[in-house]
Length: 358
Ligand code: AN7
Image (cartoon, rainbow, N blue to C red; front, side, top):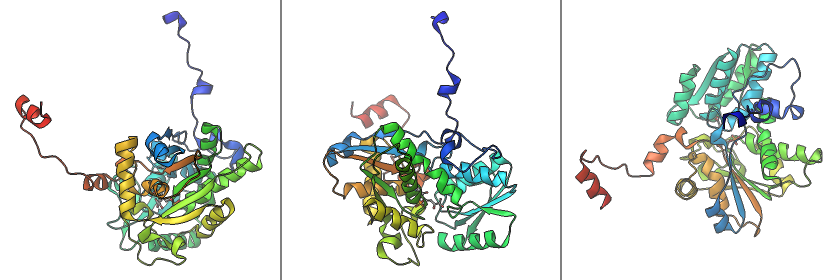
């Protein structure tokens, strides 16, 4: 009834983005102009099929629900806000795709110029489309991500006018740690295991930092085991040496010399976790499984966390979170390559009935 209708409680209902929501944990003050697209508060989805397979309670932290479709937005809101605070006009990054999409979006919001270096031929179509439509200067580099990042590091060192927004920028890690806060806030308990894909290793570093900060403030009394997974063809941390020519179907994590290598090993060791590898076959199997059985469509790199879970023994009855780092629509080619596209059917009632077998 109309007279019973109450206006929504704006303060309570509106999510203001991760910087405002977790302000007391972040290096911001009244001088920081907060550049936000309302990132964060992504779905934590209970996964009944995986839970039953593993005899555990498995949840999927679906980071594809962020404004540009990946977890990168959590760090980018802070990195771009701090760049704006410092008066920067230009930001640059190397990227396997998602960082470039996110940087392009937040830079546009801040009125900054954004330049991105991406490995030619190894960026998913959706990500390339995003970087371009948000208006970034996109440079396809004739080399891989590691080479592009090296150039970006040099740009950052030689020009004070350019802010690097790769995860070597500490504000990126600070923003990304809010993913751990959300998981704990939503679950009401600390997971026993945290499964996560590892590429440049910024995200595993960030989540571990977040879990440790909740512990330190007395909000929680434990922290999960950090379980990181690299693609077998791009697994420098597992192998213990740089991979000169990384190869994997999961182009997002096609990285042979991760910037946060040391921090990832620290997260593994302090948490009592592990960093292992999953093959492209295992990644794609988990990718199809997630869509078909849990109705969650992520990009191939994201499925590395679940591929890892599928082959890892977890304690019976434990609480498990797998981070799904990016949206499935980022990489339509990967999806199409996993299915057979049906042939066209005549536009008649009879033809459709024949197809349906009715
Ligand atoms: C979907 O965009 O490195 O271990 O340049 O896009 O923090 O690097 C992306 C990485 C996992 C790995 N899942 O995270 C980039 C980039 C997805 C990703 C990762 C990435 P990190």
